[in-house]
Structure formats: structure tokens, C-alpha cells
Image 1: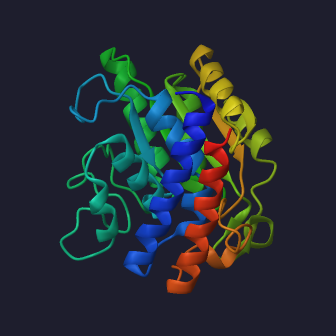
Image 2: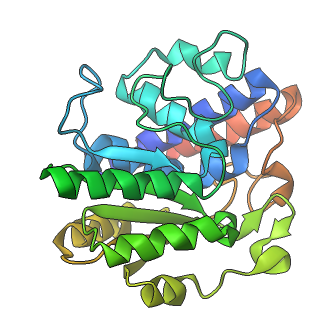
Length: 278
């Protein structure tokens, strides 16, 4: 896909996110919106996947380590054709396959259940090690929140990934600088994120997480790295695309009411119209 096509799709993913959490009257829009661009790039450009054969053995694996941003992942999966878009408005409802955190037993396209912070990257490391042991060619991607870096398990997994030279592992950090209680510096600063991962033996790439040129370049570079895992640290805006949600920690885990939903969708409709004029 061209960058413009990716931008248009990311805008659709953002609309889906808002529709999901509004319908559920709960969920996590802020971090889903900040990661919408990388969800779009992964599922429409980067990963070797097939919606018609979601369990094909050579598929690339993705683990959403920050599992609470499931609305963003579900939106990308639906747009990619893994299940009907109509399912999105069943988010968090009893009997729905789209629960508040990803459940691999019920949702097509999911490679791992996640939600307990730190465990997703640990599972991804295990998948990457398995590929090395059995000579499989697939790559493993995992997305972490910057607040998640406060979990010790993240660094245990990172140390192991480096020790085992897992160059088939690509860790992505959504650095929107906000978590549920405020800025990550105020709560428990993980900065400097790049230097910490470098000290743990990672190849480090810093990008603007809303720039598809930079994302394209970063993922291409990651594939050239040998003998060590890669981390792509994305500088992003929490709540990206919705005027009243941007850079506002209150929208970490809150759903818009009807009036706020209308404003949010109007913001995204306007953005979509602007993209159509390019």
C-alpha cells in the first residue's frame, strides 16, 4: 500500500476504535488511537499473514503486550478481513469473541492472549526462540506501552532475547508518554528508553509513530539486523486524531458518551475528507 492508502486505512481504524468503545461504554481509546498507525502498517504492509488461513504455519506472529488496547488490534483485524466489521460493536459484550483483552481461543488472527503487562513480550520471546530452535522463518512482533516498561518482566524477557540473539524478534514501544495515572515520568520514569534497550543488547530505532515513511524505513532496517533483537521506539500522541482525547490521560480507559462520540467521529470524518483530497 502507498503511504496515502495507509493513512486512509489508519483513519478507518481510528473510527472503528471510537465506535467500539462507545458501543461498549468502556475500553481503552487513548492508547489504541496512538498505536493505530502501527497496527495498520503491521497488518496491511509488514506481516506475512492471510485472513483466509489465519493459522498458516509460516505466518508472522504478533503479540499485543499492552493488551488493554485491544480495540485498536480488533479494528485492524476486522479491516484486514479476519472477521466481519459488524462484530466490532459487540466489544466487551457477553458472548462476543471480542473481549476487553485479546483471547486467542475465540478471535481469528490472534496468536496470543494478553493483558497482564510484561507477559506479552515474554510470550513473543518464546515464539521467537521456538522459530530459531525449529528452523522456522517467521518473524515475531510485539507492541508494548511505555508505562508497561515499568514491569520487571519486560527486562527479564529483553535480557533473554539478547542473550539468545533473537534477530527474528521486533519489539515496538508506543511512547505516548501517558499512562492511567498521568505522565510516565510522574509515575515511574523509564527514560531514557533507547539507552536502556541498548544496554540490554538491542538494536534501537527511534521513529515518529505517526509517519509511515519512518515506520516503513524502521521495519525494513529491522529485517537487516543479525545477531540481536530490534526495538522500534515510536514517539506518539495518546488519543491521536480525536481533538479532546489527544495528550489527555483521562482517555486512557474511558469511553465517550453520545455527544463526545459525535465530536470524535466528526474529527475523524474531517481527517478522512482531507486525505481524499490529496
